[in-house]
Amino acid sequence: MALTRIQPPAIADVREPNFRNIIINGDMQVSQRGTSFASNGYTLDRFTMDESTDGAVTVTQDTDVPAGYGFASSLKVDCTTADGTIAAAQYCGFTQNIEGQNLQYLKYGTSSAQTLTLSFWVKSVKTGTYCVRFVKEAGSGTRYECPIEYTISSASTWEKKTITLTPTAGSTSLITAANGAIVNSNASGFRVFFALAVGSNFQATNNTWVAGSDKLGTSNQVNFLDSTSNNFWITGVQLEAGSVATDFEVETFGQNLQRCQRYYEKSYNYADPPATTGSGGSNGLQFGGATANIDATVLMSVRKRAAPTLTVYDLAGTSNKASYYTGSWSNGGSLGGSRAKETYVHVDTNISSSSIVAWQYTAAAEL
Amino acid sequence: MAIYSGGGVIIMITSVKKQYNSTNNEFDGYEMVKNGITSTVPLDPDNTDYQAIQEWAKIEGNNITDNGA
Image 1 (spheres, each protein chain N blue to C red):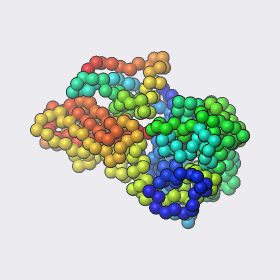
Image 2 (cartoon, chains in turn red, orange):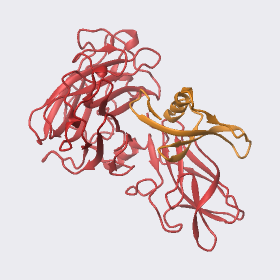
Image 3 (cartoon, each protein chain N blue to C red):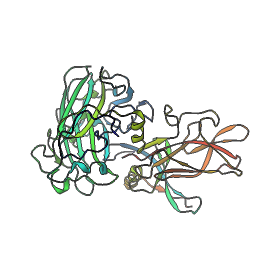
Image 4 (cartoon, chains in turn blue, purple):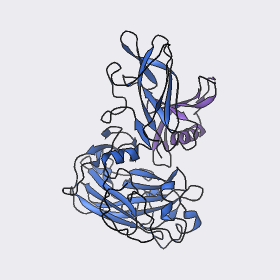
């Protein structure tokens, strides 16, 4: 539920959801997996890094934020290995996918499709033209994409950017025709990709909807990876219906975390990333029984988008193992099986020598 | 092997094995090793790891191991 409504909706016929901001964790406050990520995949909650160049980047949750606007965290991308020339099939950027059933009020696929406005704060060592790529996922129809340029004018200075995405961008009618509909399910229906480098295979015309796939930006996109001095920060990401960028929608940390947990949850303390080690059974879910090979079921905090991928860790941080007690704690105990549904996690241990076991888990139902 | 999923994620799957329920011996998921971490993937078409496994298995040289129940 929104805490405060700052301004009225930009368009009277927009049926606003409880959350005005379509982006989850736009203030970069929630990061359940840790605070530094050198590999592709999920980073801060709901944001994936996708780097495919000869360079390398590291994503961190950072405290550098625009002063005076109430933000506490940003997502920082640090170029750690440079790639001065982006080949045709190379690219780099980060993404948030959005569940289709949350977006039906946008009326995509009809002549009443809504304009969207994306606003965010950004700071970069490297100035120039950057792109945001919007994707209407295929669902049972066709995927449409629209890259839109924005400019970072001053090096290492926070700037607020606003981008308007119209359903007829480039004088097209792809989104307003039936195939422009967003899938009404728990699958990804829409995607926002912040480009950092785009090879020529992935370039398209600015601000124009196009059918097909992987149009990540335009030919004007700078190569953020051309120097290890390059850093990029972003926070306050908000995507909303209408043509006006309203003030960032403030949520409590608990609300934000709960929305993120529909896609990812862990049994660890919030501050402990997955595979954090714990001493004895004091830092894990502990189960005892009169017999060996203990089975246990745990109800998760939030129902997942779909049955999640389950990873079980022993207290030494080894996956697919459990810890067990036989006078003292040991690690590396075998699992007899594990599975997860939308609401619960079930783990069978296969440790005949112990009647107390302990383990941690992560459950991922990302888009 | 790196796979561009189309969903924006590079997926590094090294092996996949069928997992059987220890109670009723039914095939109920996959044991997947990705980025060196072993996880259980449900037989849910809405799960993106399940989708990635189907794509991974189409690539020549990749096989889902089946050791039976």
